[in-house]
Image (tube, helix red, strand yellow):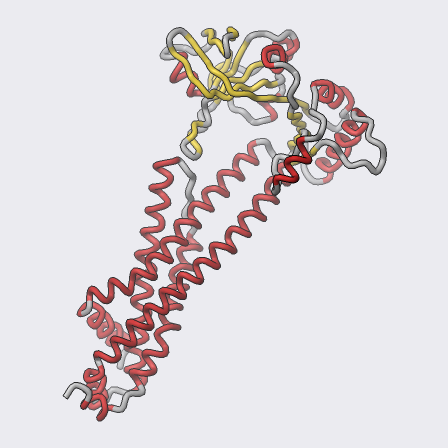
Length: 408
C-alpha cells in the first residue's frame, strides 16, 4: 500500500469519529499550547531583561550597598546590615579612580508631580548627578540633560518622562514649564525617550532632578548607587573593578581578610544570573512538557486500542483482500501520528495566541521562537508514533479469519 493511500485511509477513519478524535486531540493541544505559551513569554522576558541590562552597556560597573540580585531572605538580611554607600564614597571614587571614564551616582524615591490642576502619583523621583543620563544611555528626545554647574549648585531643573508630558504638562512645548515635585518647584529642561509599559506598569512615569537637590529635599540618610563607565570590557572592566574595590575598602578602613561591606556588579553579573535562572526555568518547563505529552500519548494509545477493537472486522476484510501486516501497521501508526501532529499544530497556534493576549493585557513581552515550534511539532509527532506502536502492532497481528468472525 502506498504511503499516500495510507494517509488518506487514516484521515478518513479519524473524520468518521469526530468526537473521539477531538477528545484525543485535547491532551496534545493542552500540553503543546502550554509549553509554547511559556516558552514565548520566557523568550520575551529574556530579551526584555537583556536589553535593559545592556542599556547601561558592557562597560558599566555598579557600586552599591547590596548586590542587585540575591537568592534568599538570609542574604537580604545580611546585606541590609552593611553601611550605606554615601556621597563621600562617590566623591572618593570621582577623585581617585584613574581608570574610570565617567562616574555618576543616583538615588530614587516615589512622589507626586503637580502642575496647576494636573498631577501624577507614584512617580519615580530620581536623584541623578549630571553624568548619569549618558552613563544610563538615556536618550533625551527634547531639550538637554543636566550640566555640572546645575548639579554642583543644586539648580531646580528636571528631566521628565513622557507620562509627565502627557498627563501633567499638557500640549505645547514642555521645555521651560514649571512643575512641583513633592511641593518643590523645578523647571523642565529635557524629556526622555518613551519606553512603554512593562507588566502593565508605565516605564515613563519618572522625573530626574540633580542629586544635590534630591539630597536636600529627601535627606542623605539612605544609600546611593554609584555607576562607573570603565570605557571597555574584559581586562579593562576587571582592572577598574579592582580599583573601585581598593578605593571602597580604603574608605571603610577594611583590614586585609575582612569581607567587602559593599557590592560591585557589572552587566555580565546580571546576564550570567539571568542565563542561570532561565536555564533552570527551561528545564522545569521541559519536564512539565514531557509529562504532559506522555499523558497525551497515553490518551492516544487508549483511543487507538478502542479503535482497533471496534474495527476488527474491517481489519479482517482488508487482510482477506490481500493487505499485509505492514499495511495495517502503517495505517494505524499514521492515524496516531496524525492525531498528535494536528494536536501539536493547533496547540502551537493556541499557545502563541494566549501569549500575545497576555502581552496585550499586561504588556508582558513575548517573542515567538521558531525552534520551539519545530521542537513542539517533532515531539508531538514522536509521541503519537511511540504510543501508537502497540495498538498498531495489535491490529496488524490479528488473524483474518478470527477478525471476520468478530462481528458475525
